[in-house]
Length: 244
Ligand code: NAD
Image (cartoon, rainbow, N blue to C red; front, side, top):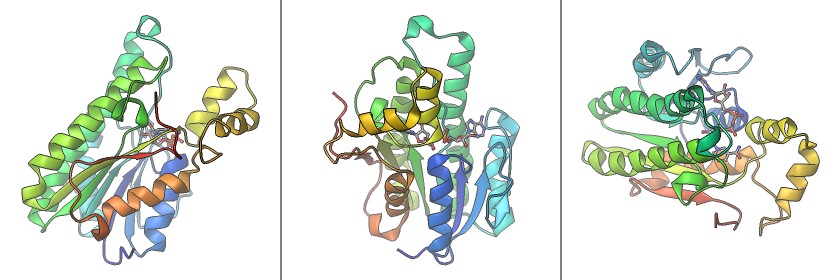
């Protein structure tokens, strides 16, 4: 897969999956704009730090990326937050945070980026949803799962609506990935993250949970010309472990 000459915007670029997505796009020749709250120390062609809950920042991000690189071909909506527990434990702040980062930000970014891509001959959007919500209910994470279902539905709708403009919109739906998001959850609940990751890996038919590169490679595939006939797809990446 060559991304030579392609201009890419990646959100959540400082996170577990985002870091590897950025590295792999750049390794394949892409020029990458990194977006996250803190992007210092990340090697990239342009840095646009900010908070995706800030509507003005998020509304302006696609245009700022286009201006920084001279074009925008690929958008990866990777940033995400996880709120744990059932609905009865969820606060108003949990609701606003989950909806703001996981649903509203991708909506605002797609709304701004798709016309730019269409005007320039087309492009690709890859959303990072989850098996939880994107494919099936997830236990004890009601708000998180709901937001990932919303993102999956947006992906399917946008995949249909914007294919005629040459903009392909697809999503990757990972099961558990060995990143700070997962490990911090174990630590908060008093488990040793390494032990917990190993035990969780034993429940996966492939024998381990995903590493960020396992997800990044599918993101790159969906963004590439190899996926040229895919629009609105929800691609499960689960090592054989379906969400029951
Ligand atoms: P991570 O926590 O390592 O990275 C998430 C990144 O999003 C962080 O760098 C964070 O700073 C950024 N972010 C969060 N809120 C933001 C805000 N308001 N403004 C700007 N940036 C913000 O998590 P990860 O595991 O790498 O997650 C990447 C994506 O994969 C997420 O969408 C997540 O929901 C999804 N996912 C993760 C798993 C998993 O098990 N780790 C499973 C399925 C899906």
